[in-house]
Image 1 (spheres, rainbow, N blue to C red):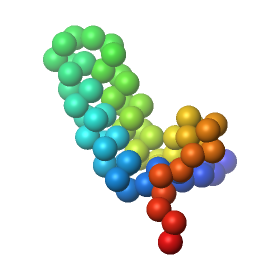
Image 2: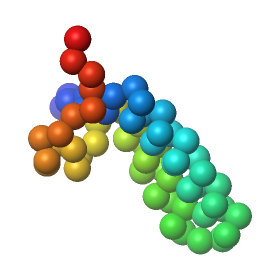
Image 3: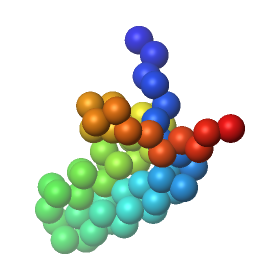
Length: 63
């Protein structure tokens, strides 16, 4: 199964930064909500967001 890339470069960088911050916050606060950071980092890594797919949205710049 191949995922459609719908996350652009700027969106990817924002997701990575936010994911790291949320994950670190979760670790230091001792809460499981930091796992949400892993979701953001995972979508940034594979460059595909299921929510974007449902909404037929894409932040990939057209060439």
